[in-house]
Amino acid sequence: MMSRYTACLLMLTLSTGAMATASAATLTAREIAVKSDTRYTGDSSRADAQLILIDRKGRERVRDIRTYTLDNAEMEKSISFFVSPTDVAGTTYMNYDYEDGRDDDSWLYLPALKQVRRVAAGDKSGSFMGSDFTYSDINGVNTDWYNYSMLDADAEVDGVPVWKIESTPKPEFADKVEGETGYIKSHLWIRKDNFVQVQGQIWTERKGRVKFFSAQQLEEIDGIWTPLRLQMISVRNNEKEHASVFQFSNYVYNQHTDEELFTTQSMQRGIQ
Image (cartoon, rainbow, N blue to C red):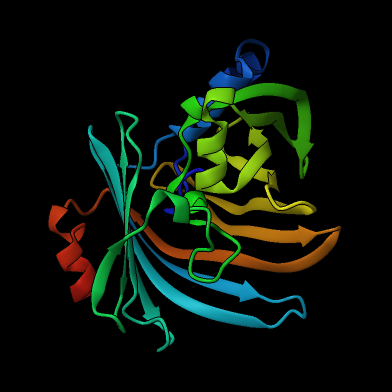
């Protein structure tokens, strides 16, 4: 699912407390952001998820999903199969995130149309399946497009030490970032002990609209720190509009390597 969802969303690494203390004094804002973005999530993963859409009155709609990832030297592949309810069942989203810096490739299969369509770069700032997460949130970002600066090297979130970092597009990538993400600036709160981004504030190109991200319920699964709850809240002119939550369960790492799962043919077949 954010950094990456899968998606965004979810590549984590381990760090000892002593290392974290040293890092606080020696790492630059950019180095911290890169470590967070490239943290280890296993060579593959499988998980169940619920995408919960919450309107301004607190009413919820729930969508059940099965997600897979596969990481190799060339790219990280992810695929999400929507299982229920019936209005979205059979829908599939797939993304290739290339290690050489090329733009992601993304595809969406809509069973009503019986057609796989490529998600254009200009569409990646749009809502992912009606949620507050965008396609770019799910796919993750290219850290080379951004400048990073330290806002607070001794911040805390829920009593846990974090770095607070500001991310802004480099001038030469500003149009590209705005077109593909819809965002103009972000604040990131990254834990010092494991480099997990646990909080974010995102300013959008739409005046007066800000989004608030949080990663909660961190558990160490197969040696990998994994947030089981990702939330995005959209606020306009200081009033909450709506929110979305990814709630994950049944995480399994490093137990599948089936390349054929990550194809457009698999998108159309769905979960077998």
